[in-house]
Length: 170
Image (cartoon, rainbow, N blue to C red; front, side):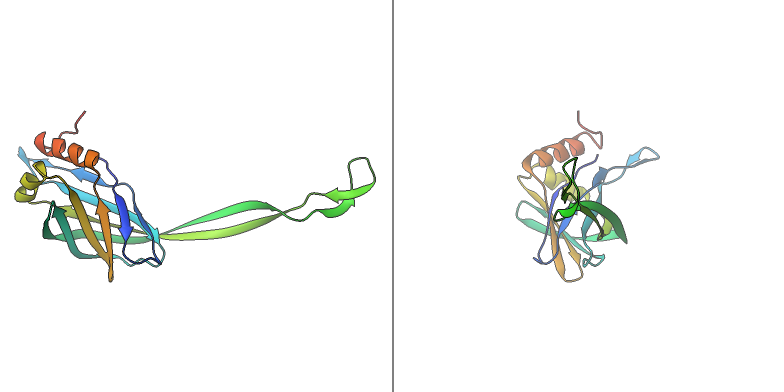
């Protein structure tokens, strides 16, 4: 089940947002696995890779989790823009010499880092989420804490996902 959460990094000089997040359960030999949350974050180029230390906060109870399959990569996008400049002199439009619009092309490269990993819930966590009023995650990029906030409507969908044993609610 795809779901992105609001993300916020503690450091005001860095930014981050969640994209491509996914809640999943696997069925192997008829046995349904615990929920796995696959996290994908994109942020400023100064963000470091995610550490293995993570926390889930269900209502007021905070529990340490292990972030596995951590991955880190850079993403570069080149943007070209046409920028109008001051009017230059030249031949006008049938009226002799006059102002002719001119443009400059600006090229800039935007770099961001992509951070990802997997959090596996315990059965106890799943049970706690079923009656939870709030849910939040905390990850770490070097010394910077990153919080993922689950909205009330998202929490309801996650609760249905758990109740339906991993089936995506309609």
